[in-house]
Amino acid sequence: MAMDSKLLHNDYVALIIRLIIGVMFIYASYDKITTPAEFARIIYNYHLLPGELVNLAALIMPWMELICGIALIAGIYRRGSIVIINLMLVIFAVAIAINLIRGVNLECGCFSVSSRAKSNALELLLRDIGLLILGVYLFINKSTRFDLLKSKS
Amino acid sequence: MKTGIRQAILLTTLAVILGLATNTLTETGIPFFGNWPSLAGSDSIIVPPSADEGDPPFISLDEAAAKFQTPGILFIDARDPEDYEYGHIKGAISIPYDYLEDINDPRVTSVPKDQGMVIYCSGTECESSLYLGRDFQYKGYTEVSIFFGGWREWNEAGLPVEQDI
Image (cartoon, rainbow over all chains, first blue to last red; front, side, top):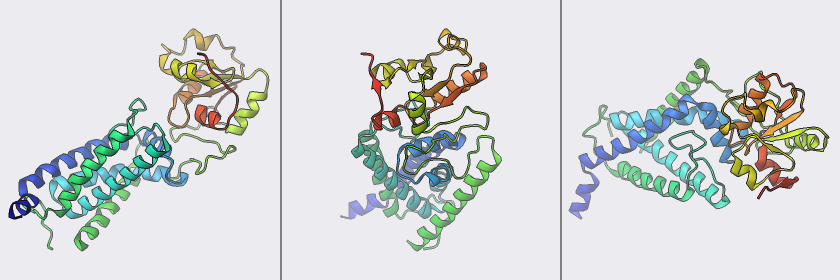
C-alpha cells in the first residue's frame, strides 16, 4: 500500500507523463491553428455540434490544446490544465464512440487535418482512453516539484 | 479542486481570446459562425468555410436534383477513380481532381466552355469539388456549380446512382 502511494505521487513519473501529454497536445494544435477551415470541416463531419457552433469550436479548441499543453509542461496553472485536458479527452472519446456506433468512416482531426488521414475509430478510441488514464493519474498525483508556478492549496 | 476549476476558467478564457483574435488577424481566418446546416435538409446549401467570394455557386440537394432532370447538364465526379467505380451519380463523368496533372488535362479541356455542369465529391469530408470547380472557372467556364453535399447526400436521399463494376 505504501508502495502504491509512493508511485502515485512520484515526482518523476508525473513529470514524464506531463511531457508526454503536453507535447502531444501542443503538436496536435499546430495543424488546426494554421488551417481552421479544414478543421471546421472535420468537426462538421462528426455531426455532433449544431452548425452555428462548428466554426467557433474549430477556432477555440486548438488554442485550448496549445495553451493547456504549455501550461501542463511548464507547471503554470497545472491543476487547471489537467482538468481541461481530461475533459477534452472525455469529449473526444464520446465523439469518436458515437461515430463508431454510427459506422461513419471519419477523419479524426486529431493530429492532422489532411483528408487522407482516415483512421480506424476503434484504435482512436483506445488511444484516447490510454491518454485519459495518464491524465487521471496526473489529476490524482499531487506532485508540484517541477511547477514553475506553485499554486497555494 | 476549487483551484483547478478557477485555473481552468482562466485558461479557457485565454484560449477563447487568442483563438478569436488570431482568426481576426490572420489571412486564414474563417467566419465565426459557419454556414453549416444543423440538420442537413435537402433545401439547405452546404458551403465549406474555405469558400471564397468569387467561387462558383454552391447548390443544395434539391437544386442538384433539379439540374439532374435538366437535359444537357453534365455531372462531374471529382473523387478518386475507385470511389467513382464503386458508385456515382447516374450519368456523371469522372474527373478525379487528385489525379489531374494540371488544368490543361484533356479530361478538362474536352468539355465545351459553355457546358452546364455540377461538380461533386464525397460530401463535406472532401474539397476536391471546390478545387476542380475553381479550375474550371479559371479556364473560363461560366456554367459551373458545386454540389458540396456530394455523393453522400445524394446517395442517402436515394437519388439515381450507377456502378461501373
